[in-house]
Amino acid sequence: MTTYDVRAKRWEHGWELHIAGVGVTQSRTLWDADRMARDLVGRREGLEPGAFEVAITPEIGGGLDEETRAARDAVTEADRLQRAAAAKSREAARRLKRAGLSGRDIAKVLDVSPQRVSQLLRTGTR
Image (tube, rainbow, N blue to C red; front, side):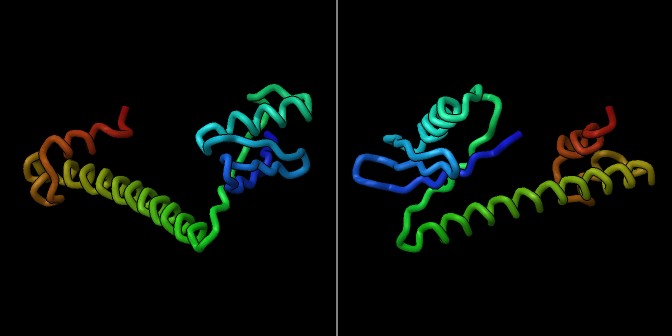
C-alpha cells in the first residue's frame, strides 16, 4: 500500500499540509489533518480514501519537534520493553508451574498477584 508523506506546518489559521508529490491543502487542526490529506490525495490521484496511507509529520519549530520526537521514541521503547517483560514473565510462570509450584508460590516468586499469574498462564495457551 502506498504511503503519502505529509508535512504539517503551523500557520495563523491552522496547519498547511504539504503532501509530497501531490500538493498542499489546509486543516484547522491536526485532528482533521488525516481527513483533509486523504481528501486531496484521493481527488488528485483518483484513489479511494482506504487505498493508501498518510504519514503526517507536524513541524512546530522552536526545538519542540526534537523534544516531541524524543518523547514518542521513549514511549515506543517503553512499550517494546513492556512487551518483552511480559513475554519473559509468561515463560517464567510456565516453567515455575511445570516445576510444581502453586499459583500462589509463583505469584510470590514473580512478585505479582495470583490473578496476574492466572493471566500469565492463560495467555498464549489457547
